[in-house]
Amino acid sequence: MERVSYRGRTAQDTLNHLRETGLRITEPRVEVVEEIHGRQGLFTGEQLYGDLRERGSGVGRATIFRTIDVLVELEILDRVHQPDGAHGYVLRSPGHRHHLVCSACGDVVEFQGCNVGDLIDDLATRTDFRIEGHWLEIFGTCGRCQQPG
Amino acid sequence: MERVSYRGRTAQDTLNHLRETGLRITEPRVEVVEEIHGRQGLFTGEQLYGDLRERGSGVGRATIFRTIDVLVELEILDRVHQPDGAHGYVLRSPGHRHHLVCSACGDVVEFQGCNVGDLIDDLATRTDFRIEGHWLEIFGTCGRCQQPG
DNA sequence: AGCTTATTGATACTGAGTATCAATATAGCA
DNA sequence: TGCTATATTGATACTCAGTATCAATAAGCT
Image (cartoon, rainbow over all chains, first blue to last red; front, side, top):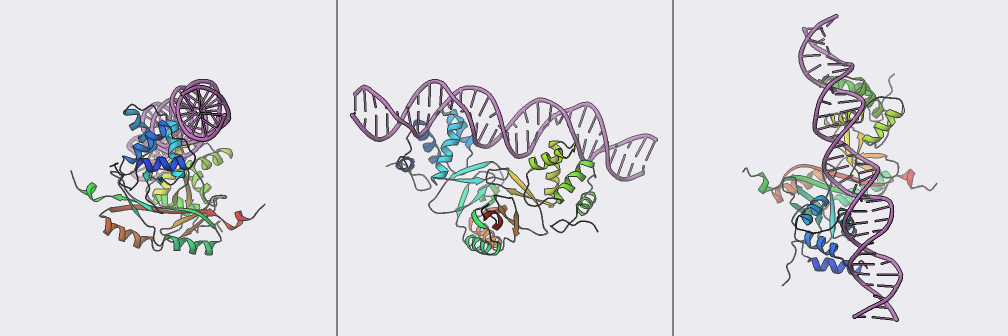
């Protein structure tokens, strides 16, 4: 039985998704997709690049970032905006979610933005803005990382 | 009568605030404070630097960013996280607010995050995270920028 | 006016990507 | 299976948004 990612989709599912979209299945893309499906929590493009390189992969920096962009576009990854302005990425569950991120270990809890939609509708009518997107991101320290030692 | 910023505070108020905090009132700080009080909407550190330089000011890049950090720390400026990961800044009104930003002209509407606090309390109890901060930022196009021409 | 030390600007650097472009590999087709 | 058009890649060099260093300067207390 194929190993299933903790988000409920396999690397193969993701590769199929790429193929169905008309994108080519290349060695670098396979490597990146397998790498992200084997990970937990938040990671940056730089980390992905470093880790793949460390294990002997020849993927280039540009390819990492290009592939990440594709995966975000296809809603396979979510982009998370970190406090320092850099981007982290996390495998996405189906549906629109927000993230609660542990600043210590990068662990991510997804949650539904429940009432944020109402807030946005309300704002749209009150302000005359056409609203195109929003982020709600929450940072903290997870239970495990709160424990000393 | 002194000209009042659209956020209800003068540059002089801000300088007084700096002085009361024990910080020195220097020429570069005066220039930066006056510049931000004369502005509308969102601006970046780079813009502030460029604009001051253009009008003959000798402030250095590092000083701009240092001064911005001080003003964020004193809650005179709010830091806004933009889609590309860069930071924008906006003069802050009293109290904790969130921002609705026009991606075309940088105009900013502040709003109260109303029910976000409840959501966060709920998450804290359900996830065992100690929550340290959050952002809610909304992007769109303001009424004026929606009009063609 | 003198003195202490906070602050500054020049410079060089970093981190996080992005543009360019010739070389290569993929996928569809014969 | 081999051919071909073109999507994709990796090396390189670059940009953008800051940050570290540090000697020179200037605030502001006394």
